[in-house]
Image (cartoon, rainbow over all chains, first blue to last red; front, side, top):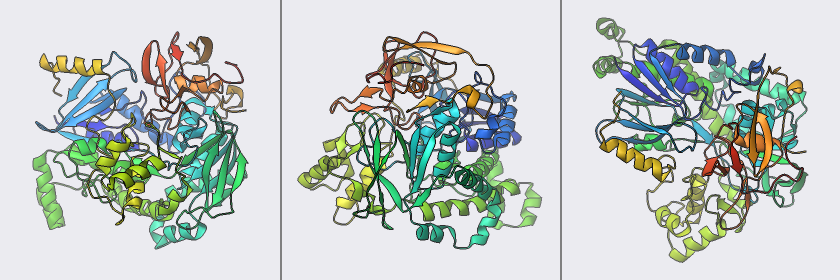
Length: 498
Length: 108
């Protein structure tokens, strides 16, 4: 029987697991947390039951059906607390995981050698730097949601939500439902820009009515709680000694340059800021998968990456929301379950694109409903980027004292000075001379912002080297003792082949 | 004011019975709900600061909440560099933060 290993148990990974099982493969489902559902269905632990948790979630029934079916299936091995720290391709694709309590010392090593691998590693919030963004009380939208949905904790009593994108609305809703008073939601993009991004060929959105319904629910909630939604506004600074006590907000022009004279101070005890998402692509890069120009994992119509036997689904291939992620997962699972011989027949059919060929070979494309949903919701993803994408002049709210790299506490001034002194337009050398992006988060928080800032200094607006802050051969910090035990383990030849 | 748990009685999801988990935070005994992260239990006391930075001595707390930013590092049972947002609290855990305790003083 073929074994399909899936990394990530969010909507894409769960849909992929089910489809791979339907296709007859055995499945190993790895997730770093101790629960299924990923960030989208982040929920209370089993030790905190309730009568109507569905009130906090979109598509909760779908999640329960999926997770119950996978948990009761002996052909699915679900491994929680599994941190995949490396993928190597020295001898086929091998997935190295460390399993156990988060950041613990007694974790187990396990290496998987799957017939097919599906990367469903998702995305995390992207928050652009601003003065004071390192103060306690400044959170990403994802943090506010995780604590509200996963713990029933409100990160503050008077909370401002700011940034860009439709995700700000469910963040505000989660906060209200955890007991916060949300004073406003600020969207950086202006009304005219958002309308232009959303409206070309609006009929294409008809098929995405379910998504419209989800958004409509958030908007209705917002109206019910009378939360102001202000477009063309941003948080440009947070203030406080040891924690946030106020923020400065300002109007932005269409390119996100703050407009002089529009500053206002708002008193808050927490602020949640997100400007979009960064896909978690380091494992895909480690596996050798090619990327798109926008730095997502490139896939074909089967969700196959540029590497034989490695598929990708969900936010790693583009930010499109839960419905697109699940459609992609289902398609990836379908193909991953098939042997390469079956696949080449199907690929030939697809190339010939004749119904007759399908009938004679017996090979089929992925389920029609998943293919249709993928087409519809991919249009939705393009609109999100067009309407809510990051605009270049956000650097206008930075000062030389603003911390850009949180881990190494590197300021904009330090980066500017190093760039000038070394006359360098190379990301690699600037990282080494300033340490920006070299801290413990491995550039996850600041990497893409550092790249943009350096590009803005370069005369041609581009860097000379092709270095990227997305390469992380060791995908998470390991303790030295754990690496040593790993070596010992390997030398004793105890490697586990699944 | 500040961060706090939504009281079970006010929660629209109508929570059922839970059990308590007790840990120490910088020597003070603090009680949370079994299944909570250490970050959640500390923040429920409205303590947002979890450590100070090495070079500029700046306060830091939970930022990303999903284990990516490594800003919420604390010490648990003598082991350093544990992400408070990712680690589930267990009875008796001895947590040492590098931050200042809440001005509002301890657990409720």
